[in-house]
Length: 231
Figure 1 (cartoon, one colour):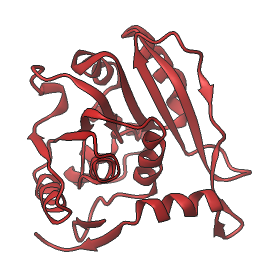
Figure 2 (figure 1 turned 90 degrees about the vertical axis):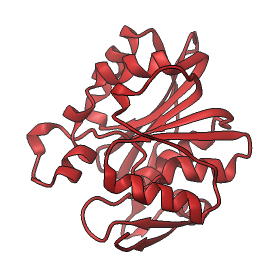
Figure 3 (figure 1 turned 180 degrees about the horizontal axis):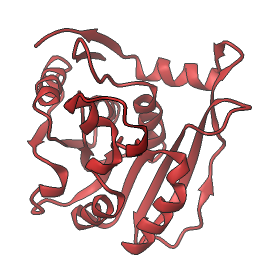
Figure 4 (figure 1 turned 135 degrees about the vertical axis):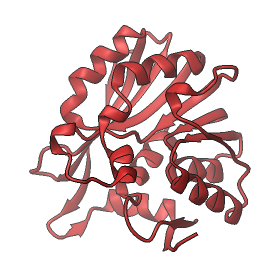
């Protein structure tokens, strides 16, 4: 898949590819909403691989809206894109899957004055409680919410999901190396579920100075080519 991105500033990284692979485990179909789509990578990959997905997305930043539309066009994927803040999105439509690689950096690590980077990275732009309340209002009964986040916030994630009566069904932690702490957590939650949490085998990104076989398989499956340009 060819993906156009801005020349400078925020670009998608391996987190988006890991999330795409994680979501693929649950065979998405029906109405799918990609929240904070950026250049569109997660939703477009899922729509490419799963013929029964009907893709919508929401993105508030004008810069990324241009790239998401371009990427849907060049990859010939039907795409309904809401140019809106997710928290202000109208709630007429309901979804079978809501997926997201949301901003999750704590404000304490804020290092950039770039507005695009701030909106894309920092959790204060989409607080967990407000985020999850909105997700629940947009989901059909017994549907799926799949997202990634900072693993140090996993306790807060569990608490915030419980408040909106959603239950974690599957979770996977991503570690840069086997001896390193997790750098990402991926969560599959459902409304109306009574399942126990299934903790998947951790994804180890690198062994010594090479990608692990698991990581290589994900990159091969995603098959993305990034082109940085000015639209």
